Amino acid sequence: MANILIVDDEVDMLKLIKRVLEKDNHYVTLINHSKDIFHIDFRRYDLLLLDIMMPDMDGFEICKQIRSLVDCPILFLTAKTQETDIVRGLGLGGDDYITKPFGANELRARVNAHLRRDAREKKYSVNISGVTFLLNAKEAQYNSEKLLLTKSEYEICEYLALHRGQVFSKEQIYEAVFGFDGESDDAVIATHIKNIRSKLLSKNLSPIETVWGVGYKWV
Image 1 (cartoon, helix red, strand yellow):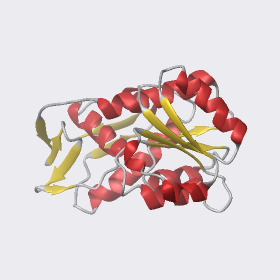
Image 2: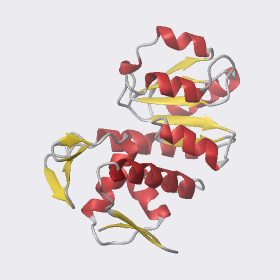
Image 3: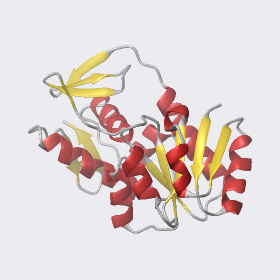
């Protein structure tokens, strides 16, 4: 049971998503005008669903403005499937995207997977390849300085690091981290890995190795 906020300019789409998510006993709040976001306390919510293509202010801009204010998963609803759009959304701090049209079961699975991941409680820390993972806080540090990873980026790093030396395909990483194997997994994981590498390289760290034709491993 979670508090979920959905922002979409299509009223029928909002009503449909609300009915689907309420089957899992979630509390769902709907907004169909992007201008109304300025009256919302986003900290109240456990997960946000943002439509990308909206008049006045699109989902990318909303995410950009609120990402620093909230710590919950942000999922994009989109008819766009080009890699540039995926890269932009995840680069702004989004965790995943759901491509329209989507089925009710896919929507429920993706939302609940992110909620489960966000609610996990771990009670220890571990240092792997110079990176310290504070597993309870879901935070990674290098030389006692916090690495500015999104939740999804952190989870991918944690998963690979805790299985150091093992090679995982993009599909395996997605399913392990998000709990649902969907058609968009390759693009999501590849983009997250690219963003992670950029952030770690700024600290002269490069622990994620590509095994061509197979996947990735933490070395």
